[in-house]
Image (tube, rainbow over all chains, first blue to last red):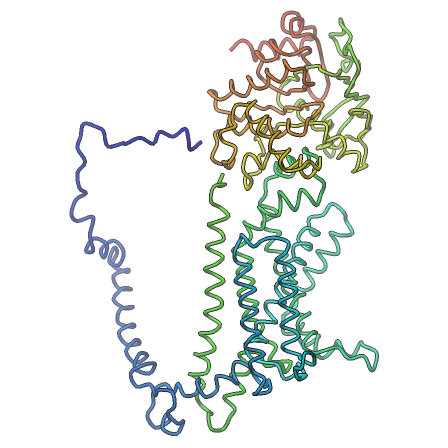
Length: 372
Length: 260
């Protein structure tokens, strides 16, 4: 209806425009409206200002002013107080790459670069073409070759030695990119007209969702091998990865189901009436709209799964958080846990915040133009 | 149950090769009997207006013709294909039967042009260029070609409904079903949609139209069908129907919609 709205200049009346009263605009009015508009808000404002005043200076002091620069030995740090950033510079490679052979650590470094490049490329909607799938297969193959080695003159590295950021990225990126299509199928299955498919989907989703991720990881690492015939060994990392995929798929399926339910019945009917078959109607009409609606809950799941990869520590895999903890167990560096967790926290935060920002941009892009 | 026999049988319909044939069609929603013993035969090129009070089963009946609703008894044959549970047959029928909805049901995430080319490309397997050329032709015909690259949400209701008609026409259907196409429109937009429908009728399109626009019925229809409580109560030429209604229910309905 937008083009029917009269958009001409409205300032054409006989009464000239006046400025609003002075006490309703400007910083003083803003303060009064937002911080001191009621007595309890005024009280809260004062209380929070006091807390900030108490908390910020010591924090800044520890972080920056009395912090020991890179290179200060830990003994000196202990006496001086203040943050000891030597911990980060000293332990950086261990935290990032875990127990991967020291001289070969360029391989996990390239792995990190490849995975981040793949993710960034997939963020651009112009690249959302079938060939992007091939790029992913090629990229992940390269990652596999780099990490395992054993070919092209690379020494073989067992995956029990993998750790740090590459492990976190691989678990989450591979996990989410396999879980996502699976979750779409589960969500469609849950709304299927075919009773068998519906029952299977519902059972799967409710079963997996009702179990804590930790217990699923335990089952994958401890119980699952008991059911295998002797001699058959199934890689521990792979089992953890599968547990993650199963769990993430169940959660994302529910997010997508929410989107599917929000699509008006008329869209299904219009697609049917044009003679589109089920997969065409879903692929061209229903899913593009449903997934756009599901972005906020999906990203919520993405973010929480990225962080939940740190749970693999309980089955003896060393992801980013695991390597940081291991670094702290070095007797020379015991006690610098604030620096360690702050550093890890910043890395996690950068990734999660980027996901959040990107999803907001994507939502805006997808809504542009076709808002009802 | 003799009331289900059509009262206005003064003239026998249709007069030509039938494209739609319903025989003894019944439908229930749970316990509720929505369609009762519907016999309907539609000739090629025939223009039919279906009217009746709300809840009389008009929409349900035409929605059975492309199996958006399933009937439980009787037979419906469209373009030589009987509508049963067979999905392949249902898709074949839907290709040949266009439908225009009360609420337009355009795809909001696609542009007007993409709305029109989607089914020809994916269902009729037409090359993209050819589908776009045809879409532009039909968009011109409904006088909205200049909006081809806008999204449906940017158009007025009347414009959206004209796009919906063009979208259906792009499949080159043999029959067009209209389900209260002007009921959701602001009054000033009704005419632009009716004009397009009149143009279609003049070109000889087979049309079944559920509508309350009695002016349209009088000027365009070959036959007016009156439904009440799931039955076809009366059907006749517009002239006979409006001037000499046979059954009391028809008379009551006409007095309610015409004298206000």
